[in-house]
Length: 166
Image (cartoon, rainbow, N blue to C red):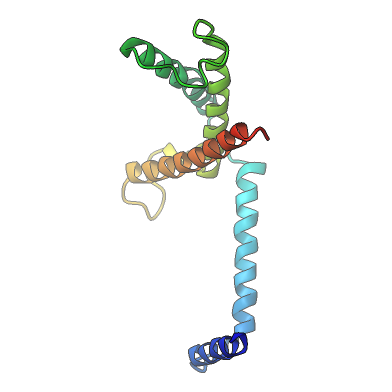
């Protein structure tokens, strides 16, 4: 059965070859080189990021690290909802340290997301729009959504590590 599947796969690959000069091996090598360049770009985003405004990092750390978890606690207390699990670790009256620890996690995840989406690069937030872009807002919003998605994935991963005690 495996031999037949292998022969079928080979027949499909031969059928896809429309007489182009590029062989399957050349396509494979080009794909490997493309993957290496993508990996190098991804590593460069984190190892040597382009940060044009250091104030953005401080503002993001304050908002994600203090304001967001603080507002979450204030809202829960104001509406009488139960406190989040991370807030009640030390008891109901000791909220400052858990809030700062949660904020540190959120700020770290957001920093990773912002670096992955190149949000600290001037082309993300400066006018006029970069070449080829019609709308500045669309470029910025797309990068913020990409960064937020990456930060959310990091937060889920960090939470799983905490839950399983790794």
